[in-house]
Amino acid sequence: MVLEYCEKGQLRDWLLQQKNASTVDTVELLFRIVYGIAKGMRYLETKKLVHRRLAARNVLLTGELEPKIYGFGPEPPQQQRNDSDGDVTSDEKERIPVKWTAPECLMSMKNASTKSDVWSFGIVLWEVFSLGETPYPGIRSRDVQTHVKNGHRMTKPEFANEFYHGIMRSCWNSKPKQRPSFKDISTDIGKTFNNAPSDEFYYYSEK
Image (cartoon, rainbow, N blue to C red; front, side, top):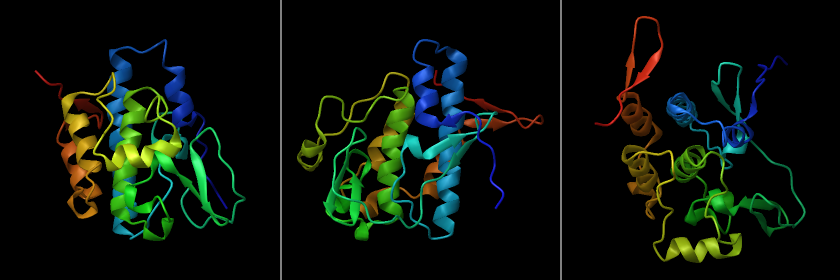
C-alpha cells in the first residue's frame, strides 16, 4: 500500500499552531483549506460514501497545506468511555463524536448520510475559522443535544466572514433534506476564487 506523506499532520494541530502567528495570509490559507475539504467531501458524495466522523482531527495537511480527508470507513467496536474530543458511546459498539454529529445521528450512526456529513462540515468550518477551538465552547457534550434541539447554533468565529458563517448555518439546518449538498457548497465556495493562469487561487474579499 502506498500512502501520501502529509508532513503537516492533523489540521487541528496546525490550526492551533497559528493561534499566535495569524496574519492576512493565514486567513487566505484558511479559505483555500476549507475549499479543499469541500471538494474532497464532494468526491465522497459522488461515490455515495458517508464519512460519519468528519472533524478537523480527521483532515491531514500536505507540505503545501493541501487537505486530505481520512478517518472514514468501518470502525471496530469500542468500549464505553468519554474523551476530550467529546466522543461518547451510545452502546457497546458505537462511539459518537457528539459535538460534530448531526442531531438525527446522536442515538445511532446507522442513520448517517451525506446530509449528516454536511452538518459535520459546518462544524469543521467553525473549527477552522476559530483556529482549532473545540466546538460549543462552554457547553458539555451531554448538553449539546438539548442545546441544538432548542434551536441554538454557534456564533460566527473570529476569522470567518458572513459568507462562511452563512454556509455554517445552512449546514446546521435541523431538517437534513434542507441542508445543501457538497456539490452546492463546493460550487458556492469556488465562486469566491479566481483561477489564474499560474493555477494559484485568489480569494475575492468582501467590500
